[in-house]
Length: 103
Image (cartoon, rainbow, N blue to C red; front, side):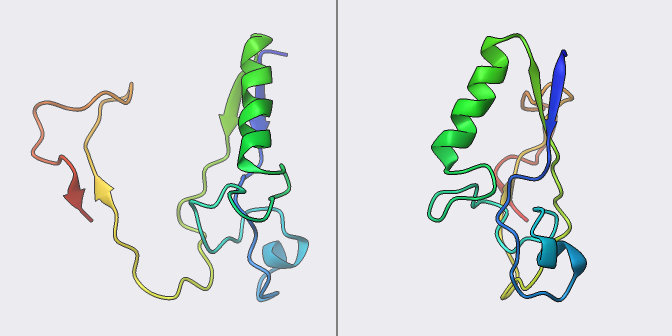
């Protein structure tokens, strides 16, 4: 095994309006930043998730996150975020004016 994909780490919505919120698999979520900071997710606390990823890396296994940015349910309003344009390696694109821009 060289890579391991983790299903979404988010806390699932509990409103039962969609199958994913009924089975709570992480694909129907209300807060993309809550990875277990308060109540644990299916992976445990944020520290337990971090430890699991570190253990994979320590054994030479790549951890792949299943990132689902557009399946937010019951969001109480618009969400404001800052964005910075990067290259394919995650390094800041110095030729771009998009740097900590509100989006």
